[in-house]
Image 1 (tube, rainbow, N blue to C red):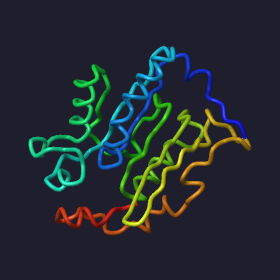
Image 2: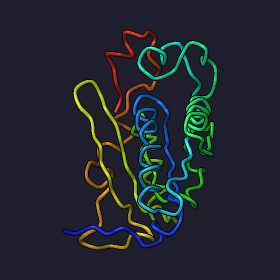
Image 3: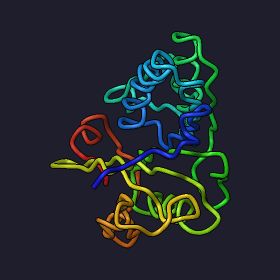
Image 4: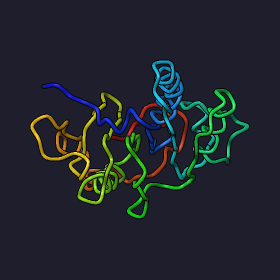
Length: 202
Protein backbone atom coordinates (compact mmCIF):
# COMPACT_ATOMS: atom_id res chain seq x y z
CA UNK A 1 0.00 0.00 0.00
CA UNK A 2 1.29 3.45 -0.91
CA UNK A 3 1.91 5.99 1.83
CA UNK A 4 1.70 9.73 1.19
CA UNK A 5 2.81 12.68 3.32
CA UNK A 6 0.37 15.41 4.15
CA UNK A 7 0.91 18.40 1.80
CA UNK A 8 1.09 20.60 4.92
CA UNK A 9 4.41 19.00 5.90
CA UNK A 10 6.11 20.16 2.72
CA UNK A 11 4.97 23.78 3.04
CA UNK A 12 6.45 24.69 6.43
CA UNK A 13 8.99 23.44 9.02
CA UNK A 14 8.21 19.95 10.33
CA UNK A 15 7.82 20.19 14.11
CA UNK A 16 9.50 17.26 15.86
CA UNK A 17 9.34 16.43 19.57
CA UNK A 18 11.93 13.97 20.88
CA UNK A 19 10.87 12.54 24.24
CA UNK A 20 13.80 11.08 26.15
CA UNK A 21 17.46 12.05 25.82
CA UNK A 22 19.16 8.86 27.00
CA UNK A 23 20.91 6.31 24.82
CA UNK A 24 18.29 6.10 22.07
CA UNK A 25 17.20 9.72 22.26
CA UNK A 26 20.70 11.15 22.08
CA UNK A 27 21.61 8.84 19.19
CA UNK A 28 18.63 9.74 17.03
CA UNK A 29 18.99 13.43 17.91
CA UNK A 30 22.55 13.37 16.58
CA UNK A 31 21.23 12.31 13.19
CA UNK A 32 18.40 14.82 12.89
CA UNK A 33 20.62 17.75 11.71
CA UNK A 34 21.62 15.68 8.67
CA UNK A 35 17.96 15.11 7.80
CA UNK A 36 17.30 18.81 8.37
CA UNK A 37 20.06 19.83 5.96
CA UNK A 38 19.02 17.25 3.36
CA UNK A 39 15.47 18.59 3.42
CA UNK A 40 16.70 22.15 2.90
CA UNK A 41 19.01 21.04 0.08
CA UNK A 42 16.00 19.49 -1.69
CA UNK A 43 14.04 22.72 -1.44
CA UNK A 44 12.00 22.21 1.70
CA UNK A 45 11.04 25.65 3.07
CA UNK A 46 12.09 25.06 6.68
CA UNK A 47 13.47 21.60 7.37
CA UNK A 48 13.02 20.42 10.94
CA UNK A 49 12.04 22.41 14.01
CA UNK A 50 13.13 20.14 16.89
CA UNK A 51 12.35 20.17 20.61
CA UNK A 52 14.05 17.78 23.04
CA UNK A 53 12.19 16.82 26.22
CA UNK A 54 13.63 15.04 29.26
CA UNK A 55 13.34 15.75 32.96
CA UNK A 56 16.50 13.85 33.88
CA UNK A 57 19.90 15.29 34.67
CA UNK A 58 23.22 13.78 33.65
CA UNK A 59 24.53 11.25 36.18
CA UNK A 60 27.95 9.56 36.47
CA UNK A 61 26.41 6.32 35.11
CA UNK A 62 25.15 8.16 32.02
CA UNK A 63 28.73 9.05 31.14
CA UNK A 64 29.54 5.36 30.64
CA UNK A 65 26.97 4.44 27.98
CA UNK A 66 25.52 7.76 26.77
CA UNK A 67 27.24 10.70 25.03
CA UNK A 68 27.72 12.84 28.12
CA UNK A 69 30.93 13.90 29.86
CA UNK A 70 31.93 14.27 33.48
CA UNK A 71 31.75 18.05 33.07
CA UNK A 72 28.04 17.76 32.27
CA UNK A 73 27.04 15.83 35.41
CA UNK A 74 24.19 17.58 37.18
CA UNK A 75 22.97 19.42 34.09
CA UNK A 76 19.74 18.77 32.19
CA UNK A 77 20.15 16.13 29.48
CA UNK A 78 17.79 17.97 27.15
CA UNK A 79 19.54 21.31 27.61
CA UNK A 80 22.99 19.77 27.15
CA UNK A 81 22.03 18.01 23.91
CA UNK A 82 20.19 20.99 22.42
CA UNK A 83 23.06 23.34 23.27
CA UNK A 84 25.48 20.95 21.59
CA UNK A 85 23.34 20.68 18.42
CA UNK A 86 22.75 24.42 18.21
CA UNK A 87 26.39 25.37 18.69
CA UNK A 88 27.75 22.85 16.22
CA UNK A 89 25.10 23.19 13.50
CA UNK A 90 24.02 26.80 13.96
CA UNK A 91 20.46 25.77 14.80
CA UNK A 92 17.77 27.24 17.03
CA UNK A 93 16.26 24.07 18.43
CA UNK A 94 14.62 23.97 21.85
CA UNK A 95 14.86 22.06 25.13
CA UNK A 96 12.14 21.27 27.66
CA UNK A 97 13.78 19.95 30.88
CA UNK A 98 10.62 18.15 32.04
CA UNK A 99 9.21 14.65 31.93
CA UNK A 100 6.42 13.90 29.45
CA UNK A 101 3.07 13.71 31.25
CA UNK A 102 -0.66 14.00 30.79
CA UNK A 103 -0.21 17.78 31.01
CA UNK A 104 2.30 17.94 28.14
CA UNK A 105 0.95 19.76 25.10
CA UNK A 106 1.37 18.16 21.67
CA UNK A 107 -0.68 20.83 19.90
CA UNK A 108 2.28 21.96 17.78
CA UNK A 109 3.86 18.57 17.13
CA UNK A 110 3.89 16.92 13.70
CA UNK A 111 6.14 13.98 14.58
CA UNK A 112 6.81 12.63 18.07
CA UNK A 113 9.85 10.42 18.59
CA UNK A 114 9.50 8.46 21.81
CA UNK A 115 12.73 7.21 23.38
CA UNK A 116 11.36 6.37 26.82
CA UNK A 117 12.48 3.62 29.19
CA UNK A 118 9.18 2.46 30.67
CA UNK A 119 5.82 1.20 29.51
CA UNK A 120 4.09 3.78 31.71
CA UNK A 121 5.82 6.60 29.82
CA UNK A 122 4.98 4.97 26.50
CA UNK A 123 1.32 4.70 27.54
CA UNK A 124 1.28 8.41 28.43
CA UNK A 125 2.53 9.21 24.94
CA UNK A 126 -0.05 6.90 23.35
CA UNK A 127 -2.87 8.63 25.20
CA UNK A 128 -1.72 12.11 24.17
CA UNK A 129 -1.17 11.42 20.46
CA UNK A 130 -4.41 9.45 20.01
CA UNK A 131 -7.96 10.80 19.90
CA UNK A 132 -9.85 13.75 18.43
CA UNK A 133 -7.79 16.42 20.20
CA UNK A 134 -4.43 15.35 18.75
CA UNK A 135 -3.01 16.39 15.41
CA UNK A 136 0.27 14.43 15.64
CA UNK A 137 0.92 12.94 12.20
CA UNK A 138 3.59 10.40 13.15
CA UNK A 139 4.74 8.61 16.30
CA UNK A 140 8.11 6.87 16.08
CA UNK A 141 8.78 4.61 19.07
CA UNK A 142 12.24 3.33 19.94
CA UNK A 143 13.03 0.95 22.76
CA UNK A 144 15.47 -1.77 23.66
CA UNK A 145 16.39 -4.29 26.31
CA UNK A 146 19.20 -6.77 26.87
CA UNK A 147 18.33 -9.04 23.93
CA UNK A 148 16.24 -6.99 21.49
CA UNK A 149 14.21 -3.90 20.84
CA UNK A 150 11.75 -2.14 18.57
CA UNK A 151 11.65 0.70 16.06
CA UNK A 152 8.03 1.33 15.10
CA UNK A 153 6.72 4.19 12.97
CA UNK A 154 2.97 4.71 13.19
CA UNK A 155 0.20 7.21 12.53
CA UNK A 156 -1.92 7.67 15.65
CA UNK A 157 -5.65 7.58 15.08
CA UNK A 158 -6.69 11.22 15.58
CA UNK A 159 -8.16 14.10 13.62
CA UNK A 160 -5.04 14.24 11.44
CA UNK A 161 -5.00 10.51 10.67
CA UNK A 162 -8.41 9.10 9.88
CA UNK A 163 -9.38 5.43 9.97
CA UNK A 164 -8.12 3.84 6.75
CA UNK A 165 -6.50 0.69 5.46
CA UNK A 166 -3.31 2.61 4.66
CA UNK A 167 -2.82 4.21 8.10
CA UNK A 168 0.38 2.95 9.72
CA UNK A 169 -0.48 1.24 13.02
CA UNK A 170 1.32 2.51 16.13
CA UNK A 171 3.42 0.55 18.59
CA UNK A 172 0.49 0.59 21.02
CA UNK A 173 -1.71 -1.14 18.45
CA UNK A 174 0.86 -3.63 17.20
CA UNK A 175 2.45 -4.49 20.54
CA UNK A 176 -0.03 -3.66 23.34
CA UNK A 177 2.23 -5.25 25.94
CA UNK A 178 4.66 -2.37 25.43
CA UNK A 179 2.15 0.12 26.83
CA UNK A 180 1.11 -2.00 29.82
CA UNK A 181 2.57 -0.35 32.97
CA UNK A 182 1.90 -3.50 35.03
CA UNK A 183 4.77 -5.15 33.18
CA UNK A 184 7.29 -2.50 34.17
CA UNK A 185 9.86 -3.46 36.79
CA UNK A 186 10.51 -1.42 39.93
CA UNK A 187 11.73 1.53 37.85
CA UNK A 188 14.75 2.08 40.06
CA UNK A 189 17.86 3.48 38.39
CA UNK A 190 20.91 1.29 37.91
CA UNK A 191 23.19 1.43 40.91
CA UNK A 192 26.41 0.92 38.97
CA UNK A 193 27.85 1.47 35.51
CA UNK A 194 28.21 -2.29 34.99
CA UNK A 195 24.54 -2.89 35.80
CA UNK A 196 23.55 -0.07 33.45
CA UNK A 197 25.45 -1.75 30.63
CA UNK A 198 23.88 -5.14 31.29
CA UNK A 199 20.27 -4.07 31.92
CA UNK A 200 18.07 -2.20 29.48
CA UNK A 201 14.39 -1.46 30.04
CA UNK A 202 11.71 -1.66 27.38
